[in-house]
Image (cartoon, rainbow, N blue to C red; front, top):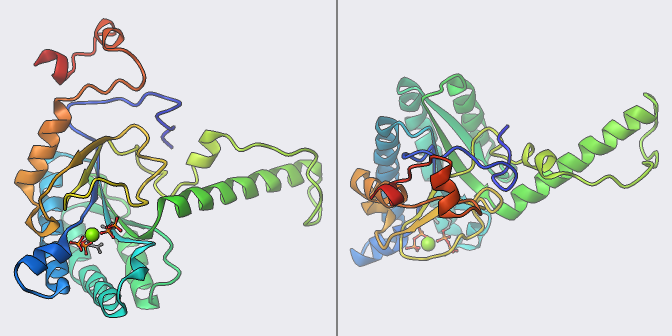
Length: 274
Ligand code: IPE
Ligand code: IPE
Ligand code: MG
């Protein structure tokens, strides 16, 4: 479990350990070419492939991609249905390749509204690749940052209740009042977040020109470096990723401290070295 950066200052290096991306602009990419929006989503899958490969080669340990937000159900039903079909096809065709390339595959989000076949493919893919340590690819599907914080808070609260029931007597029945209201700590909550297995993102990238978080990893982005690009997701690839990483490497991550403190602690950052 990695503590929140607001409690512990994470180790930072020249290369981001965790890159999180909002893959935006598929619809506009298609529109520019007088094609249906779904053509953009299809091309978006190729951009995912290239980005995963590039991250593997660059030694990035965690890549998290926002594929479908909890708000995207508001789109026209036919677009939602094509997105689901594409997700299913990608699961069928890509997971074996991920396995061959030693990529651990994970999905975060509320999976309950998905078709049972999709849920089975996810479970199989996660099981097949669970022991790989090279790169962890997380796909956020029906994910919302608020949902994540709430589900974690509920689980943490439940754990506390069970713990205090157990300490009141092993057979204390359901509904036994808890002695006093017990507050959940930041660490207790964070360990129930859906990405508790990963350090918080170092670098956040959003393509498509919008400069907003759109309910992505709200808790985990507390001290992440942001990079926005006009480039539309289907055009994104290795070169675009390198540009974002270049920008990241020129920044000084202070986590509340001053530049002088960092220098005296012996941190030679790219920004100060440049
Ligand atoms: C991102 O591209 C893909 C999903 C949200 C599934 P968009 O479909 O949002 O593309 P634009 O923003 O309309 O161009
Ligand atoms: C955010 O993209 C979600 C994904 C990329 C999956 P949207 O294009 O749906 O975001 P908003 O609603 O315009 O902010
Ligand atoms: Mg969009």
